[in-house]
Image 1 (cartoon, rainbow, N blue to C red):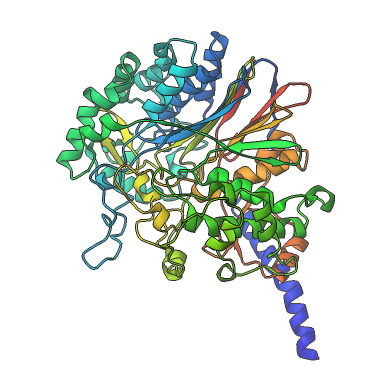
Image 2: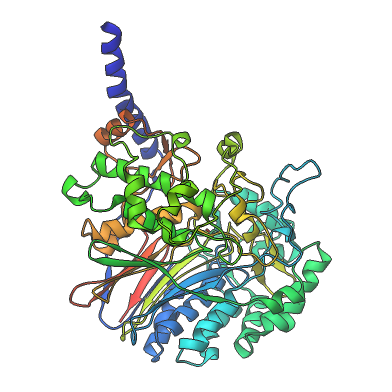
Length: 610
Ligand code: GLY
């Protein structure tokens, strides 16, 4: 009896003691913590919100000149390539969702990187079949064929109004004349800073641009990128120069000299792909997001479907039942991700089955509200289960290796921060663009193609380099995401557009690797379910579970002490982070049609409107 009493005391109060310790630790670490709630900017005609004020300025400038949302998004993205050379840019790729106000149609453009023609399934394994450490992360072999320039040009060609050249002017000026590095988010705040710095120092072109004799430029200093200005000028005259002209030749020559795989043939073959977005209903809203080769849209909808009709709001903000349900939904979605998601041009992805509300109800029935399931208890769907939601016989994820190597997963450092960049634009006609692009981890592969000023991505790491082996974000994959020539690596980028009664309601997206999908989920729920304004919605602390590793990651101050105790009692395993993650931004439309935009206080982004 006494033992039982002590045990009860322990289970009741160990969480509380844990919480107090964490709180004390966090108070000692105030500088790292973003606790502020931003106020949204309100505007009537048009709005741009991005991860950098200079980029938002460029977008707004295009809107004021009479450009539409597409023009503004293109100009904003090019400026991000200059002012966030560590996160996203013309050496990488991305996705965009676009809403055409004339038809109300939402379209998705995939301009993600593709594996080079010479890529092979086992290219990152040694003779013994073991993964070569960091081969898919650092250096020339990590680079996939970039798509950003082709994507931006394609969307402008179809939908833009202003001349292409006009859109690149702000980016060219900022690269040529330089800009002052801010004290807020610079590469110094990238957690794997030392590691990335060493990679940069190994590459003479990157070293020459981003360091002064080996030291990265500091906040308050001016960063000038003359080579990049020249490349952008060339792209402004002829966007194909990236794929068939001088820039292509410079990239291919640098690759060939340094053991990279990308050739002129890869660049010439590159094509962005228009895809149908994935859409589903949540409450009164229609949520549309990026389909494969992103996992973002499918799993965002899967989680929303699992939450289903549960009235989270009536439970109260941060009620343990609401958090528990969301976390258990996250585990199921990320388990399915590991098995089924890949490039749909190479593997059959059961998209319609995974986003079917009836499938979600089946998975919802597995969730026990009284107890958190261990990751080992949560399985990806089996084929028979999915076939119940399919008219045709699917052959999905058949070579799935169910025994992911947990020791590798648990020992893999993850470091999502500000890499990758998201932007949203809405114009006076209510055309809208939600765009996320990336070079993957900080400074991509850590190399600049000689003479171009272009930082090249390490997107090859988003493939499953071997079944069950986690990538830089701790995500595991399998057959569906195995490497093949010209294949697109699986992504988590989740540019999203929400409408209600065919009217725009919300645009949202985020960087942050594996956490992108759960960031977007939480902002959508904050706005649609909890009626927050976008400022609060992007600011409040977040949590994240990705099935493996089996841990519930918490931002500082995300839950109160009693909630912590209750969640621990149900068996949730916390990983308390001391730094926040992500850098989400969003634009919402009020019922009166006013635009409200906000950028995450965790980053340096800001909205601009008129
Ligand atoms: N490179 C991160 C992602 O695409 O999800």
